[in-house]
Image 1 (cartoon, rainbow, N blue to C red):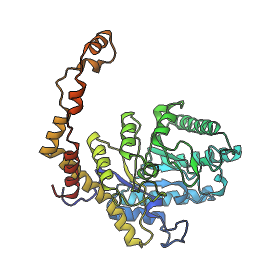
Image 2 (cartoon, rainbow, N blue to C red; image 1 turned 180 degrees about the horizontal axis):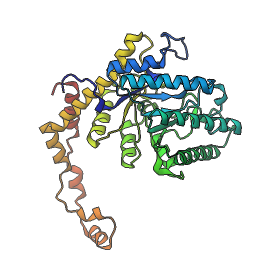
Image 3 (cartoon, one colour; image 1 turned 90 degrees about the vertical axis):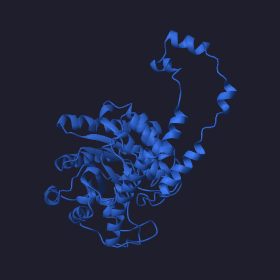
Image 4 (cartoon, rainbow, N blue to C red; image 1 turned 180 degrees about the vertical axis):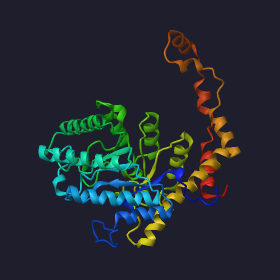
Length: 388
């Protein structure tokens, strides 16, 4: 690969809210004009993206009538048909409107909880109509500033009741939808419930239909907590729960920066891309990021192209890593063993227990063995930087 141009099989997607971001931040007004959702579809077709993801009120205003909603959706559907851009994922905004100031599904007000469920059902119907097969839940207001305000256990139960309801609704409608839960440790609330991918995986196991629900991990959200994102992805993959993924970039311990993929933590991004490619992740690679506030529309296009190009460059670097003779030789040496403990692979048995008890380990000799991780890490650095 030399041109690093996106192709449909790469399945790169962007949200309406990413390309349409107007450059507002907590301390400054917008620096870009809003972009019509139909125009966003055409921008994504121009830069070579596979798909656009639907955030309900980025397309349909929250107070639109049913007639207005129908007209907007039909216009959007026409743009998808004209460009060939797909719409594989949808999600609902349950955090911007003042009604959600104390959460949506976890609010203390039963009216708010019911309204949030109604809003999600309405979004699900449109999402399926437009072709979505994944539905994401991010609980941006599902948290608290003071634990005096509500029971954390009750909040989790309310979240479970809502997700169970949506699973049953999807089944009743025969929708081909999978649900993906997205974790974040904080922001906009002081503390959010179910703050990490691992917490989400534990929560999913308690649902009535856990087979329908997976996770949508985001780089920035795990990095905000100082965690290794690739490890979260690996856990989700091993559990069969990596239903979707949000790619961006983020320095550890900062506010939610949502930088262009590859713009900040290159080594971490390399291992992330390598993992996804090595295991054969075939889902959409969604860039939940936005252009710097300094950019105009041309800069937004540069941002979108940069996200996809960075992924493809790191994919090429991962292939070089896998083909490098010295690196692979080191890995074989590091992992070499004569098979003497293969009897443990079958799990517990009385025979395995007796063999394990009887074996004499030369603890000091094992501890003296150098593992050559320094050399391996330096070679990885040289692959990434293009020296090797």
